[in-house]
Length: 151
Image (cartoon, rainbow, N blue to C red; front, side, top):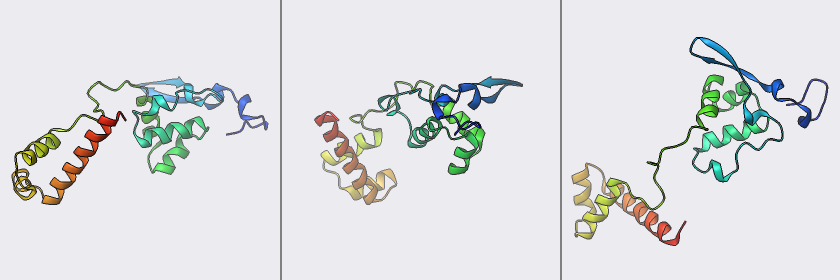
């Protein structure tokens, strides 16, 4: 986004890209940190916990794309884009899974397989298909090997 007088992006002030946001019944002016040219809001390492859509939206915001244009790209409203931007800064809880932690269904499938149950038997117990059980087993083993390698 270029200034109307043809100035370079580094000359564009934060007030040029400020937006209004509603808080309850009041409208407040918001100048997002991500919209200031040259400001690196967060490093890539900080964005690893974000979903792909959140990372992409923040990338577009840093590039100076307007909320309405970002919304059009994702077929979402500008309000949705603003919520994603604001919620990206909200700390995630410690309940987020790491690579090595298995879900309950993965632990159960592995335990039953170790006890000698066949995938077809496990599938009927879980009301799923044997292909589902094999996939859960494959992904659980992948998580465990990745955790053992230290990824």
